[in-house]
Picture (cartoon, helix red, strand yellow):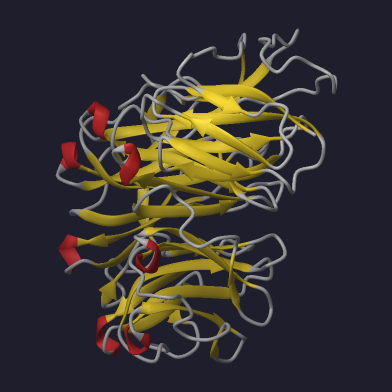
Length: 459
C-alpha cells in the first residue's frame, strides 16, 4: 500500500551542507497506519460515520451494510480488531445517512433514514446488549443527512432534518426522555433546505448549517438563542452554492464550516464566523483538486482538521490541519491505497486522528486509519531529477521536475511548522521565499508515491 510519511523534522545546526543526507539519531516519525485490518467490514459500506468514546478512547463506526441488506451496523475497534456492537444489520430496514454520536458518559447513539418509515429519521441507542429505539421509529417526517445527530452534556439527543411536513424547511428536535419535541419553531429556515449539519456549543446551544435555496443555494448557519432560531452572520454567505458540508464548533464556540466550493473549481474551502462575519480560513479552495464529502473536526488541542477525497489523487483520502497560517497536509498528500468515499474524522482523547472511509482498493469495504507515531530511519532522497536552486537562497527558489508528476510543496521550519504551502502545477516553479527569516528549512515535495525532502538555507 502506498502510504506517505509526513516527516517530523528536528533541529539542525545553522551551518550545514544542503546536499548532505541527514540521519537523526532518534528519528520518531508519524505516519498513517491501519487501525485493524483494511476492509474489515463483511461487505461494501456507505455513509461511514466515526466517533470515539471519551471514557476509554475506543473507536466506533456505523455504516449502511450492503452485506446485510443495507441495514445499519456498528463496529468497535478493541485495539487489535473490529468487532460487532450488538447484531450486524440491526435496523428494521435499509438505513441511509447513518450517523453516530457518543455521550460524555459513553452512551452510544445512532441516527439514520429508515426505508421502512419512508426514509424518515430513526434514532437508536445501545443498551449494552441490544439496539433499542429512542422514541418512535420514524418520529418525524423528513430527511436527514450526515452529521445530523448531536448529544448534549446531559446525553440528550438532538436531531436536525429537512422537514417535509413544513415545505422541506429545517427543523431540530430533542428527546426529553419520553418524547421528541421541536426545538423552537418547526421549519424555521426561510425556505427549502438540504445538506444539513448539526453541532452543539459547550453550553448545549444548537447550531445548524444548510444549503439555503432562498439564497441561491449558498450556505446559511443558524443557532437557537433559547427562544428563536437566529441567523449567524449573513444568510447565504458562501460565494456559490454548496452540497455536502460539515459544521464544527471550536472549543471557544466559533462556528467553522467546510465544503466543496464551486467558485473555486469544487476545491475545499473552510470558513469561520469571527463574531461579525464569515471569513475564509486562509485561502478559499485550498485542496489540490475538486473534492467530494468533507469531514471537519477539532483536535483536543483545538486545531481544526478536515478529511476529504481529492480528484487529483484519484479520489484518495487526504487530511489537512490548520497550523495558524496555512492548511498543511497531515501525513502526506494522500494516504489511502485507492479511491475512497464517505470520509469521517474523529480524535482519540489523546489527540490521535482516525479517519474512516469506504475503501475502493478493498471492494469498498470499511477501512479506518490513524495518524500515529512510528520509529523509522530517514534519509534525504537523492533523486537526480529533482532540482532546487539557488541554495542558499535569498529571495526566490526554482524547482525543476523534468519527470512530471502530481506534487504539493511545503516548506517546513526546523521546529516542524509549515511556513509555506502550495500545489506544484508545472514542471518549473518559482517560489518567493523573501518573507522567510534567515536560517535552515526543509523543502518537502509530497507526491503520490513518496515524499522528497531537501534542506534549504535562506540567507
